[in-house]
Length: 282
Ligand SMILES: Nc1ncnc2c1ncn2[C@@H]1O[C@H](COP(=O)(O)OP(=O)(O)OP(=O)(O)O)[C@@H](O)[C@H]1O
Image (cartoon, rainbow, N blue to C red):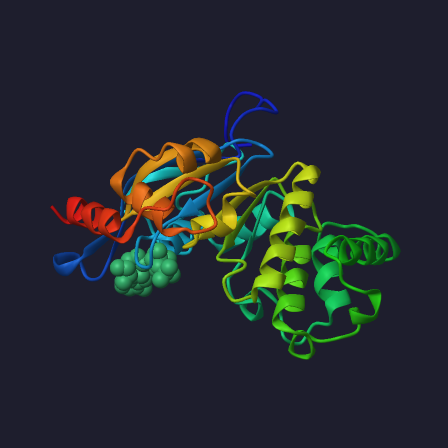
């Protein structure tokens, strides 16, 4: 434990403070994140929304230590992870603290491991006995609504939707405290998208906190407790999902809500959206 005192159950599992990330050589570096601060409570689901290029993947990668931060801090379950090396990150995953799921499940899954091996491996690493790991893997496959006869298949022998469910099951099988999911449903057709989001909603019962990254507010709002809106590298609005949809404060959030036909708030008409864009570009 890095913190000196005992952590409480209610302490945030993720605390991002004043995070700056730049890309490119120093003299020509461009900011991708500017002063981003966000906390996620145990068991909470936070949707991070923004258009293409707004910095969503950069935020996920910076939180996971895959890109360096120029300033700010990231604490996961109380540990200051800035400066952590590979071994320390592996340790965090082994201890069941943090996991992640990428948009392309082929990146989250080892192409040479069967579904059974993919699901049991993280448990075996934690020292769970083989028969118990196999039992839990089977049970988790059921939770993501996949039949047990897929256990012997390789990722390349699954459909995209099945693959993404296996990736979700693998990330959650050790019941980690925090899972970061970067566009987990955007490569899926609408039926699979709805199912994976439903599954995520159910899996919240394990007490896991989820950071659900998406360019599509409409698809994650029903699964998220809070919504954080990223615009040009800055978090411009964070609030309870219902408030963000019904009373968006920032012009960009209003544009997002107005452009999402599935949201209950009245969609903004074309002229309204043009006015909001003009406001944003002013
Ligand atoms: N490796 C990199 N080198 C240089 N610039 C990068 C790199 N990765 C991302 N960027 C730039 O940083 C900004 C944020 O990119 P990022 O991928 O985080 O956005 P995003 O919101 O995830 O977009 P998308 O929805 O298209 O995935 C963009 O302007 C992008 O061009």
